[in-house]
Image 1 (cartoon, helix red, strand yellow):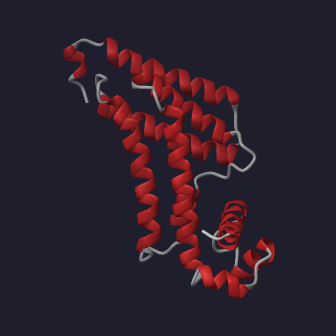
Image 2 (cartoon, rainbow, N blue to C red):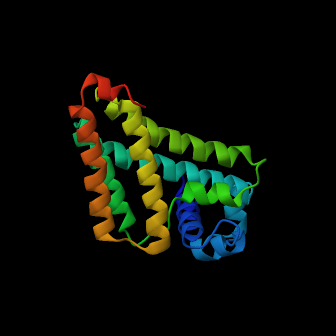
Length: 192
């Protein structure tokens, strides 16, 4: 990728994240990136393609970072690292919730490409969690519980701001539940 294309992509992502997809036009992206409109359209044929490229690039960075965080870990240790990685993200200066959810919220139901990118991103996160629960008792339940808790915290901390006490309490709760699942008898583990 050329320096100009990369600069446009990074500028667009920053603006979309700070503001919104619909509220940011190509003129603002051009002005903030310092590139001409001709250069912008050389690399991205329209705003829709730019939005797709932003989401794809963000997804790749997200996956690489989260995967690196859990490399060498398994099971509950990996789940704790996934949780802690999210908590660090929630506290970052650029945290504005999930850009994938926001993109779907601003797109039309017919915008299959944006929806597909967001779905693939969310499926990957769920799959990463599921991979770490395969050897745990009630792995499916743990996967769903942890995934939903992280998704809920994304929204809560976006709306209410990061709260360390809530983050710590939620972490303790999810891992207490996971531990209780592991110590249950087989009859107790038959419950949904």
